[in-house]
Length: 209
Ligand code: Z5A
Image (cartoon, rainbow, N blue to C red; front, side, top):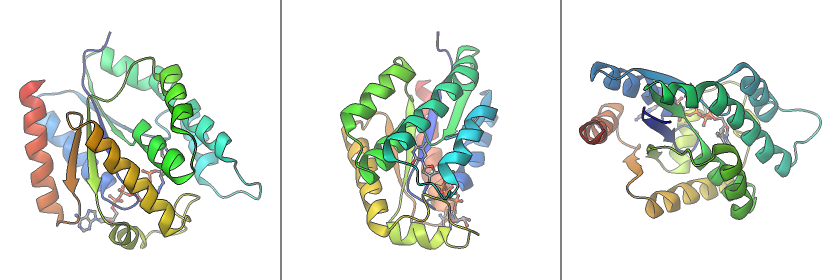
């Protein structure tokens, strides 16, 4: 039985998820919540090993069906080992990406059918989904520019501009369809303004928790 709050952070490449994850965790902790931070794909030993397969380049190309199945395999492990136990013990779980990313990247980017993703979502999550999702929204150009300083691009970072446009479009459509769950933040602003906006949403979440 879930008691804690499940919050996810989403957005295309380079929007500032990693930058803002600790900020959100600190703010919620200061407000008296017990918070754990985690990420997808990953969050457990086995799921982190699956992450390596998903992100690393290999001589053998990874098929789209394999990719989406591995995302959900990692998620099943993460839910069982980390997310459900934490929520059941009353902790707040703050996760860098979750199933919205699968709809955006595998659905929007790779063109895996939405109905297939939905089936896997029900099979793996059994009704558990994020209470709130912070979507950091930014033009693909700016996101890629911000991310460009990184070393070697991984399998996803090596995709073309059009791929990320499709990803962004799916995120925005999902936010429009579920306005109560999503908080959409304009991530093109300076970090201070982004965090001021995030704080306003967090205050609202804390008030209603
Ligand atoms: N993936 C998937 O396909 N399907 C799924 O279901 C899931 C994931 C769960 C790994 O994700 C990949 O997995 C991901 C999608 C796929 N691949 N892609 N692309 P990840 O989250 O680990 O990796 P990522 O998206 O590549 O994250 P990122 O590139 O690390 O971006 P970020 O965390 O959002 O950005 P950041 O590192 O916080 O910021 C980037 C730079 O911008 C950095 O120098 C900051 O200092 C700077 N920054 C941040 N905010 C600002 C502002 N406001 N102004 C100026 N500069 C800023």
